Figure 1: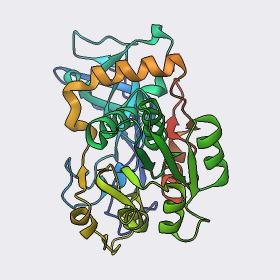
Figure 2: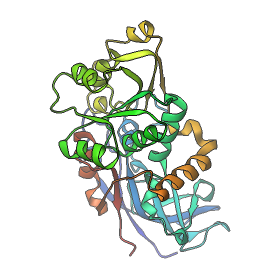
Figure 3: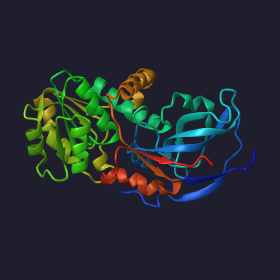
Figure 4: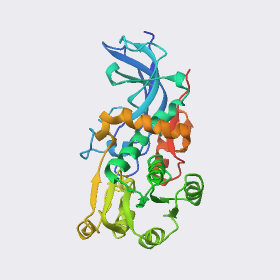
Length: 338
């Protein structure tokens, strides 16, 4: 095939704190010819998720850390440009785990073919109809186990996962309280998504007091995206037999010496169940989850925000928006078709 040049952003060193261009520089390398069973995608969309920061480190994780010298790992959607598989032809669109790069080469077995004719924006398969939506769906329903009348507290509630968690909880008959980092995000949660109460964690001051004020009957389910001081305060507001679904601790990802929670005794005092999970725990049920999420989205029962940023060379500064709270919903990089 004609030699293609692949612009990549790769992991040159492991960051101890917030990653910068010295940790994730760019390079241009030739795309190798596909080997037996391999497919080459020209990437159209690259997903940006907090978990990527964890993969940049070398601590034990639910999947292997990114190897030094490899492209930064990320979910991608791309169009097939070359194929050595009978299952994929040039022009097909597919999703896979790829990288921060223009072209991704993978085995055909690792691809999920997407149907453009359905009229669904492709980027949604990285968000509300993809890993983030599925994380919300299974994390809340299987780990949080909400019941009608429960109070559900969601941190990072305006994010891609948290916003879906809150809407699903409302459909279960729960009272839903969201924590977000700006007045605009709080208004969106309450006025557009139907959250019952909101807390601006950047201006509320006393976390425990704010949570008690917004949750006067206590918290039955806490969907934790942030960890840190907000988790510690929430532990003091949990009801008997509450459930804590631990999705992520984004407040600690760039803080190598972040203190752990100090109020874990409340798990004993209130007979609380605190469980971590990843979406991969429910891999065999993805079709179920996507089907239900698609039904809710098409019916208007789940609303979503996407922030789509153009250009591969914007990827690192765009990624860092996840950690200062300046993103609006699901964060995606879009690349030109060419």
